[in-house]
Length: 201
Image (tube, rainbow, N blue to C red; front, top):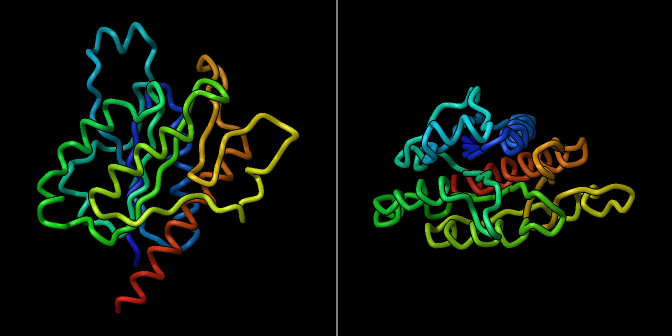
């Protein structure tokens, strides 16, 4: 069975919800899916003052675990057009996997969240792709077969680079269309990873 890791960082729960949708889609494609999150770096006093979502059920991942999966789907909010420092800190600890080529040939994919329509969704995903490519992963995005990214009747995230959501000032939660995009991406990743495994058998 294809093993998929949905690895995320979420301050306020938006990316957490998207991660759950990605996992649903991957499971629909027959994959064995784990949802894990990266460690928090912000001091607890600031976390509580800022109102971060603390009751997240996902276990904390360890960098070495990435080698156990056939596909890794990264979820990160944007920070000035790039991934959150919590995710970058985690990925920066994968040097031993890089030197041993442990992630080469696995499937990698990315989804994100921004505060506005033009808050860096595409640049965040593309910047994260660069790290995954250095680690040897093969990138899978959100193809235009997901027609929801062509919608013009509502404000929505999603691009061919990956699923995304718009959080506003935190008050807006992922829409049905954005969750559909995440699930579609999860299915597509799982199906691609399964096809690669069959081809190597």
